[in-house]
Length: 125
Image (cartoon, rainbow, N blue to C red):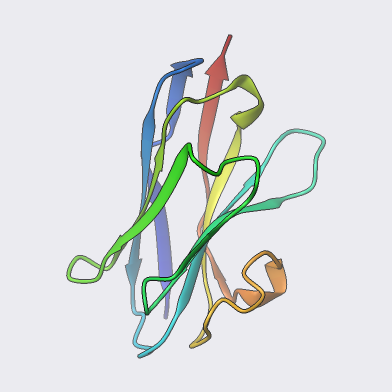
């Protein structure tokens, strides 16, 4: 049973930084795509960034140059370093993982089979 548990959310002022973590357990695939999504109140969930087992990364245009996705395979943990945060980054952030893919459709929710419960990020102006 794959489980994803996010942590690291919180409240920060605009311009600040946060690092989100996603601890994965029960994940036994040799190849993978893992991603971060976010959902603001009243809006649809949107893709933020992804990384595959080769270390290839992708980012939404809105976060390029500010957010960095990374993974520690030894710790089975996914990270999202968020710098220069803006009020529009306020959302619930979700970690997601597929079952053995390569992130070809990293921006689609349907790419992913497993989801965490989310961690709230609030950025004040």
